[in-house]
Image 1 (tube, rainbow over the protein chains, first blue to last red):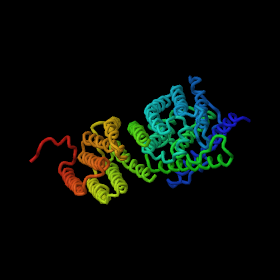
Image 2 (image 1 turned 30 degrees about the vertical axis):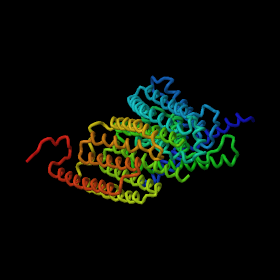
Image 3 (image 1 turned 135 degrees about the horizontal axis):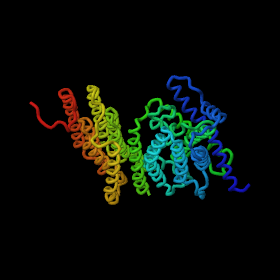
Image 4 (image 1 turned 30 degrees about the horizontal axis):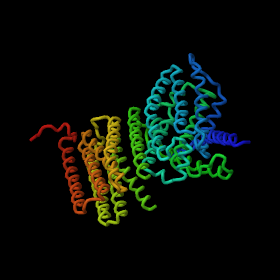
Amino acid sequence: MDFSQMTYLYLILQAVLLALVSPFLLGMIGQIRSRLEGRKGPGIGQVRRDIRKYFRKNSIAPIGSTAVFSLTPYVYFGTAVLAAAITPIFVSSLISDTYADLFALVGILFLGTVSLILAGLDTGTAFGGMGASREMTILALVEPTILMSIYAVSIPSHSSNLTAIVRGLLVHPLQAFLPGNVLALAALAIVVLAETSRLPIDNPSTHLELTMIHEAMILEYAGPKLALLEWASAIRLGVFLSLLANLFLPFGIANLGGSFPDILIGLAAISLKVIFLGAAIGAAEVFIAKLRLFRVPELLAGSFVISVLAVAGSFLFSAGLR
Amino acid sequence: MTGLTDIRLIDFSSAGLLLSAILLVWRRDLLAMVKIISAQGFTLVAIALLEGLRSGETTLLLVALLFFVTRVIAIPMALRRLLRGSSKELETSPLVNTASSLVIAALLSLLAFLVAQPLIGSSHSAEVILLPFPLATFLVALLIIVTRSKALSQLIGFLCLDNALSALALIATSGVPLVVEVGVSLDVLFLVLVLVLVIGKMQEKILHTDLSELRELHE
């Protein structure tokens, strides 16, 4: 097997592993939340059991819905898995591989969101359209923030290539604590909560029509297609959390084509980081309430301001230190 | 290497100064604003402390202690006591909506960064690259004072302004003489105490502290 085939094998392995593990991540967040609220909780395997159950059910499509509706689960799932492959999770790809670019990654993830929005509209129901319009609002507000924070993160390493950023941080770990980077982390954290439909932007555990966003768009799905959507949501959460962790503290990540122990260390490191982040989300969700929908733009505007400051700070300090 | 890590910590504190000013624009909850202003006081203490450790001047350490007593402990305590007394006014009512004032705050910060650029270029001191942060905090504090109508939130804006000025003095000139610093800090402290009394009386007599509605004198 030559080297390039080997690298693709690693990336596929990474995507498959994340896809298998991510339902448990979602289950863990739910379980931590239940325990902290004094409930027994369904156990960390509940999300996986739900997904398996949906796969056995029949799929139905609303009357009048088109191919957009039936293709969306595959697009959403496909983009999530592709993102899982190219994100540096426990192996980072080669610097020469131009696909591992932050802008490309964000584009891929947004493609999934946009397809979901279109599917929400395609059902022709009131809830689908409502959810789609809300998600579109949030997406439009999130995008500038995400671009600015990426810009801030990529200034110290002079590249938006994920591998270059991660390698740069591995060589100079202190770089992660530049004010520009810390501010970008704060802005990205808010964006990740918005994009993965967590509190305080969206509540994933309710179907209350006044507040739901993500759930409103997938309300008409049933059976295997719903299973794919739920699974893809879990994978996206895993991708976003690993990205957040590795853009700031990439310790332990293995080289592509690294030895077997390196890979094991990479796996252990990322599990630790993602479990920590997931636990933090689960614990934080106990204490916060969902924001009113009209307050959400304020929160996202705040994260935008922070990301603008991050860019300014990054320029300042990378110019000053050199 | 130690010099580098020192600067890194002071970078953090000055970024925290600006970040807390932005958070003040963001939050409406007055209790949260008091917490933020106390945290901002703490970043000021950190700047004074780090500056003192770097330059080896003991007066700066005393200044840090002074800041800690006034900005982190005494003033927030007085504000909190005032809030505990009034159950009605727990939220500010900004004249400009929060999203737009956040965007204005971002623009003001960028302006500060642009204005400070020539100053940074003209100096050899390593700390002077931090100049934009207190400058931006200053502008954002002015924004808070201008766009808030409640007396307490204006007072908080004023405190933010004062923190920014102290930080500016620390970063640009390694601090002013101790006597001046003591004078200014006590001034601010007494000003806040007096204003807290006045606001408390206002709440008792006229049941609100919306300054834009106080237009005429009553006997």
